[in-house]
Length: 573
Image (cartoon, rainbow, N blue to C red):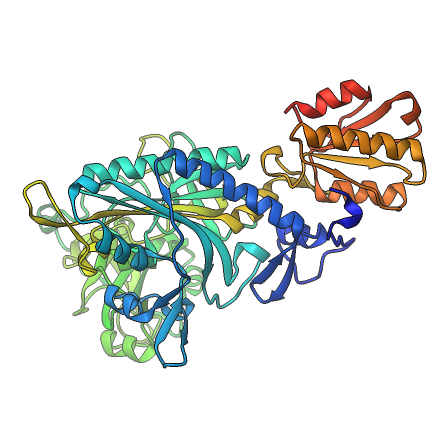
């Protein structure tokens, strides 16, 4: 490809609205251009990289036995109502009506569509297992699109769905996808971790893992054990505890109860105010927060230095919506203003974190304005509380899997997610097959997604330097950049064209910079677009000597023509 004919509008500076390094680089290197918030056009270089990512995904999906299909982007709203997700998915679901006033959605995911397809085409256990996948544009009406392709409203995604006759089959399908994902991200030269995760709006009855590319710009927090392989998204991350009493009524009831001591705390509502007033650390206090779970009030109690994990609370209650109660509800439930809620005397379900029930003593709200209580042995007085893990794990917490490990935290970009759906959709949508006995059974399903366009951004977050992009060879738009210093020098241009032709004939994707530009401009653009190997043809062209630069390491080599071609035909760059 001749660069003079390539649509590659590079920028010396990134637009001010581009916050993430990957977004800046894609704009500067001419990979993408924004059409509207969260909606981008892929220019030739960006599209070449995207196609290579697609091909890696496609090869590994095919190798796993999955079959490619292509499903419609427009989906009838009745399908989403039938599955129960039309309201659950919320405002991110893009909705529209056709000229006949029939309602549709633009698909953010395809569980409903694929289940309906298989419901109509697969009816016997003899046709199972089967895994179907597609690579397709998806739509989500993000409230705040940001970071370029990392959080957009239109994006490219690979989604796959497995259908099995039993849970053992699902486990095999899940494991096959889990292993395929490791191969995909390894081939993309991505530094990643597979972490335990929450199923979110996709739902399901089994396990789920997210694949996280480690990067400071990542919106997700990952807890990783420093001693074993445990890793989990913050929403899911557990913590280890040594608990002798929580949830054990026989031990609790045999303790001698201590009368709580009332403490006058006028207008002292927040933990930082309490720590200052009493000269104690936040771990000496208990926070009682009133939530509405599907409209019904519940109390959640955590230690003062901890934060409630609403996802854990939601999952414990099997609730659709969990949100903090407003001030009026809190006053109605506790009899006191916000800031003075406490665990004693409440007549609503109470959920106490393990760390609270292991406190020897603590200070909590008294459910009375301007008063708190000093409580000895909280577990002895909160008898009706349901003990559990209801807080965010923190750095330094004990690992929940091994005896000696401690948790450390990293930022990550979610690039893939695998779910064991079970019968969530097959039961709801009446998708069944006949087993060997002729009895109808619901399919056991799995769901497996990769954000292909997001993967492009994640790679750039990890593979760049102060000069620009540093593409891994497997997904680079071109492998070799041939740069003659002067296009007015016929010897240089003849040698450059000869090198480009020989490499292209050998299957090496080559970009020839035939622009009439200053050498400095050419070299800056070359570093910016990040092609793995640069061959510079300069003053020694007549002697057949060229200069090679390896983009990743910055190494420079002076080589004769044949040696340079042999190097370029290899893979060691």
